[in-house]
Every structure is written in C-alpha cells, then in structure tokens.
Image (cartoon, rainbow, N blue to C red; front, top):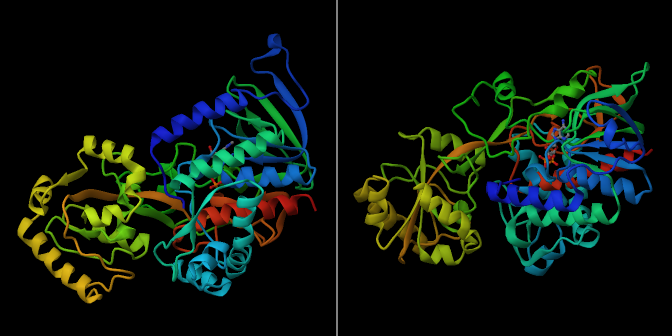
Length: 495
Ligand code: ADP
C-alpha cells in the first residue's frame, strides 16, 4: 500500500534528503575535480548497483551492506522514498506479536489465501507463498534492525483481509519507514546518489548484467559497474500516462494518479531491452477515495474503515464500504456524477485516526471537497445531495447498526450508527494507485526472460515486479512485498 500522503510530505522529504545526503553524494571511487565537471564520462565500480531509492531499494541496499557488499543506491529524484514515503506505511503480517497481544487468530495459510483470492487467483502462488512465509520476519526486521515504531495495540484490517493484520507505523505514514531506513543507510555509509537517473542496464557479451549507465543532474554520464549484479527497485508506472494507456486503455487521462512523479516504469522499460518478460501489465489498481481535485489519496477518508458510509448524489448507498478497492472504484465511477460521498458523525470521527490528519482536513475544506455541519441536511445541501433520501438512508442504516446486521450490503465488522453532530461529508473519486504488473521474477527475485530463463546478474523487487498481486493488490501488501523481496534480492545477488 501503499496509500499516499499529501505533497507537503514530499517537500519535507526533499529538504530532509538534501540535508542528510547533500545534493550530490561523493562518488565512491572516482571524484572529478570541479574543473572536470559537466558532461564528463565517469566510471565507478561496486559489487551491486541498486536502482531506485524507495522502500524496496533501501531494504536491499541495507541488507547488502550488512552482508559486507560494496553497494551503491541510485535515485533519480532529489529525495529518497518513492511511493513508499507517501504511503500509509502499514504492512500485513500474520502471527505477529501484535496479533498475539490483541488475541487475533491468524495464520500464514489464511494470509496467503486472502492474498491469492484478493488478486482473483491470478497471482503466482509460489511468489505469494514466499510473501506470506516471510512477512512476519520482515516486520520483525523493521522493528529490530531498522528501529521502526509500530502501534502496539492496534492493527488495520484492509479490504479483502479476513482479520486485522496490518501493523500501523508511528504517525500512520511512510515517513516512519523511510526516515528510519534512511538513517540506517546513512549510519552504514551506503553511498546514495540522488538526482542520478539510471538510463540503461549494461550486460557483457554473454548477456550477464554488469552495470548501469546513469546520468546525474549536471548531465554527466556515469557508468556504475556491478561485479555481482544489479537490483531494479524503480517502482511502478502509475505516473506514466502513455504506458498506462499502452497496457490498459481504461486508465487514460480521465484518471489522476496518487503516485509520486518518479513512478514512470523506467525499470520495466530498461529490463525489457534485455529480454525481460513482463507479467500482468494490464492490471492497474485505482484507490477509491481520493481528492477529485488533485487525485491525492485521502487519509481523512479512512473513516470508511471506522464506520463511515458511502452514498451517491441521490443519497443512496451503492456498495459495501469494506469491499475491495477495485470493486468500490468501479462502483463510484458508475454513479450519475462519477463521485462517491462518505458520510460520518462525531462518534465515528472519535473512533478513527482522523485527528492525526487535520492538516489534510484543512486542505480539503479549502478545496471544497469536505464539509462539517451541525445537521445532515446542511452537510448534504453543500454537495447538492438528495437530502430526503440521505435522511432515509441514515435512518435505515442506524437500524442495521442497532440490529448488528447490514441487510443491504452485508457490511463486514461493527456497524456504527450516525447519530451525533457534527456530521461530515467528503466527496471522493478513484485515482490510479498501484500497477500490479511488471517484471517477471522467480522466488529468488531473479528477473526472468521471455524464454523462461533468469537473466544472469539481474534482480528486481517491489512494485516494478509483476505476478504477486494478480489482478488486485490488497491494502497493506505493498510494504510487505517491498521488504520481503528487497531482502531476498539482496541475499541472492551475492550468491
Ligand atoms: P517500491 O515501493 O517498489 O520500493 P517506490 O515507488 O517506493 O517503489 O520507489 C521507487 C524509487 O525508484 C522512486 O524513488 C523513484 O524515483 C526511483 N526511480 C524510478 N526510476 C528510476 C531511475 N531510472 N533511476 C533511478 N531511480 C529511479
């Protein structure tokens, strides 16, 4: 999940990254004189080159350095973090210490089954098996080695999961993960090259990958030689409109994206030139509850998980609020104005994390996409929602809540009546959020070619890969994916 925080977080990250690493970090071996700068060909040699400084790339680089390898991390943006940074940072794992504390029964088998089912059984079972079996260790690694703080008495239950199993990092955001991974990378003296864009993956005459050609912000071409191999962790292609249309013309300019601008599918394009096979490219996920003005994912709208109901302009519910992201997104687009309206009250607000996202709330108020009012009628009028019908819908829903059963959509979990002012209504629309397709990998994170053979020396992890999530990634599974497979790629590139 990856679910994305506001742009302000990115700006903060730029500032932090620049102050941590400097705009251009010192080359590992070859340092050009000031006078030599500008379009100079340079060469540096490492054991492993990791392309992309999001969660997968940082996890891989840290593991590599810990194993004694000489590793460099390339990042084309002026900041680290990728989509991981602007995500909610929650990750799924079964049988964790938090589930034990909360008395939640779960198993690797159930997690695997939920994940496969969530992707319409189109995910690669062997990869999902690896994901499920290594999830607990991944979260413990984040806690113990990276020092990530998680809420100890709370787990999220995203759509499609049978039980609450998503650990919630401090602040409910990717800041906690990326901040701590970055600190660790810094402490380990991993060279990080910001504003350095990988443009080509290089291979020798036998097809063995042995380096990366990149360009820095001054236009200098740098060859990063890799004695042991290259790991691609460049993320998905949600921000690449042409690529989206190429693989699934449904996701054209009508959709905005929640993604950071660097999410342009570079790793897929580069590896394809070496014969890499692609899988599931048509599977593009939208997040249902984003700002219809900016496309940014709304964390305030997470009140949906804590009781808010979703209605249309006609004041009627039209989908189970805890259904899968794709189901809710399609249902919203099918409404008369292509919009959804989340409705909640004070009780739901107080039982949610909305209080942690008051900056976003203020922005939404300014944007005119949320309203707070003393009565349902007043709130409904703001968005020209059918007041009478909405009142009826709420009366009926409050009865369901009293009886503990949603007779209309069979909503999972606890039903909470909407009875206490102030009331809130938020206008939401789906945005492109995650691309499930990408490079075909095996269980060792080796990139597979069109003949079904591994491309020697080439590994990939995270959103750039395909095949794990099938048609639809469940909430909380992206972070588990990047940590599990980032670490596996690191282990195998050194073999
Ligand atoms: P994941 O969740 O798989 O780790 P992220 O989106 O978090 O993916 O991170 C991917 C990172 O890769 C982003 O920071 C992005 O800017 C970076 N990136 C993408 N393409 C390139 C490239 N050509 N060269 C260097 N970095 C890249």
